[in-house]
Length: 395
Length: 160
Image 1 (spheres, helix red, strand yellow):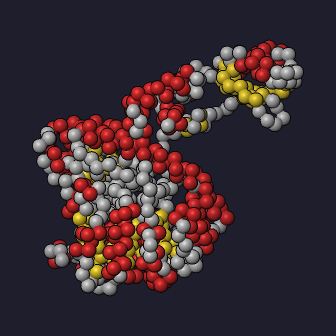
Image 2 (image 1 turned 90 degrees about the vertical axis):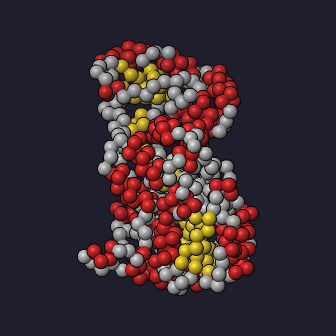
Image 3 (image 1 turned 30 degrees about the vertical axis):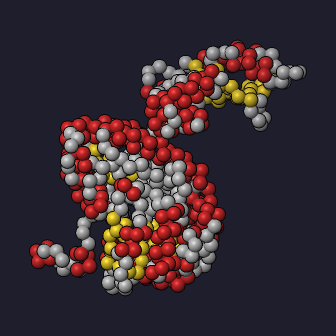
């Protein structure tokens, strides 16, 4: 518990107090006070939502679709999503009872944790990983068990490392691939190994696949498609990244009936439903957004090649990210910690990146650079980073 | 691969082959060869600059002219279209469907200049029997670029 408790004017719950403030926040506060900063910090598309999607939402407002939807989400959206998952992966989730529309994957993740965890239950979480994973497990009363991943292994999670950490309290494995922050994509073989571990120990696998469409030259394997895994996994997905719809906050969860029922129960008490307008937009995205989405992905791929080559040319070793829109270069050659690197790079060269340590101990020695920003900005950021890295030398 | 290269160049004709090579993951010699071929077979017609003339002193008047013509035996519309597009005032000439046959975009210095072009040049061409001239009042979007396109930054800082 924090020592701040005594000096605070208001009582803050232990639960809230236990959460460490996001390591990213600090940089953004600093960043907000500066001009001329190129940000490779924010993990969201730089595109605005394609116009036809926005227009569908506008039309729904004009027609007066302003009321609650059913708790699980607009039936047409659930049906379309069910069809999409069948066409895309051959997965069959019924639109009635096996699929829930949520307020972004963030809510879906929270619901999943609260639906399956009892106090003290352990959840295997990769390290480094998206900052919310650990927090969501803790908020649901669980205990995150960090499982390291390394650059040498392409930041893929090894079944062996998972199995070593399994105790009689382990309830679930939380996967987030393609990965934020590393850009790693898990190979089908390694996922099969994890599926076997899950099966052997009777664990549920929660697979956050928000970046599923953002893969470059490799195939994304949906975890639920692996043998036997549809029945013991929770698939989380959303519209934010593939359709540039972060602000609409629409995600979804697919799982066996009992789990979705539990999640829906929590969802209806805490959220009622996802925003109506957002759901209408998501429906349009599913029906007609594929082309625009593919164009954006092709563009991310061009920027990905530019940033990875640029970082390597500067002298930073950079693992080749095959998914999401992040590069995760090692900054060890500068002799700085990742926080020092990010802080000095921001103050000295006005480039914002996120220290890898914000995503877990295994992220130390790396920084996350989001390349969902204009090519011109990426190039200018690389020029500034080059100056910075040569100043601190290569040790 | 050529398609990817063309898309990059269509968006920014000044992109050097070295950069295209990185963006597409293609060896630079291959990029150069493909561009050269495309130039030679006129897949790439020209490299030009998209200018916002509203920012520059000196009036420029645009007119969209639809033209009805009588197609000629054996050559159809092509010969008349050619007689029209040879005038340097014409920037674009299309054969179109609908109640007119040809679409002509003409750029001139004044309304008068365009009026003269229509009455003294275009309508005198044999086979042209009706024209419909529309002056452009304001350009909103040109070649995919929004002209007043400086949009405010909408991204806010967020923890994620």
